[in-house]
Amino acid sequence: MPSKLEGAMDALITVFHNYSGSEGDKYKLSKGELKELLDSELTDFLTSQKDPMLVEKIMHDLDSNKDNEVDFNEFVVLVAALTVACNDFFQEQQRKRSKDEKKGK
Amino acid sequence: MPSKLEGAMDALITVFHNYSGSEGDKYKLSKGELKELLDSELTDFLTSQKDPMLVEKIMHDLDSNKDNEVDFNEFVVLVAALTVACNDFFQEQQRKRSKDEKKGK
Image (cartoon, rainbow over all chains, first blue to last red):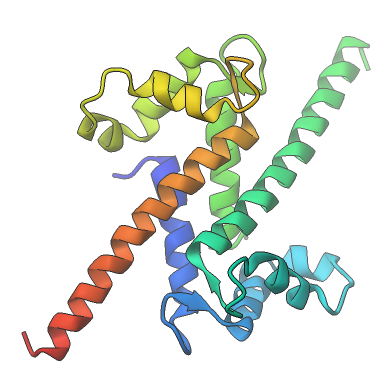
């Protein structure tokens, strides 16, 4: 039985390969595959963003070796950045709450 | 219902805070908390490593701002590096298998 952390690592690998295998290099996301992954797996994040060029921008930022595809290492950088942003938000909320509790609100 | 990817991101945040809250700064892992997290969440990885100084070394490598604690950003770097290593192994196995299949093994 894998731990919660092992399960999360496994999910990252599985999700990537669920989309990277559709076309071209099996182990890399083309722009179409990246868009499909973001659409299906991060729907709320994408719909909250109004920028029609978002996928192009993400692709451009992630594709550090400029081969027009996103490999697993580049994908993990995206997930790490998003998770850190979520955690910052979460910690900020927690801090506010404990401040309010001290004030007896 | 969160997607598989959202679930994984949520798990990373939850696991970190399950351990970081025990002592000292609630939002950072002390050396003791890091050891507990690694022991419980990455048991197989730790037991396969024979180096008794491993936790000290990981702590030293991760703690980029040298405050003797590991914050969430530093923790995500560890998880990303381990996941990339797992994925490299997985892809290598896949490549070997498809090579063998072509050979008709």
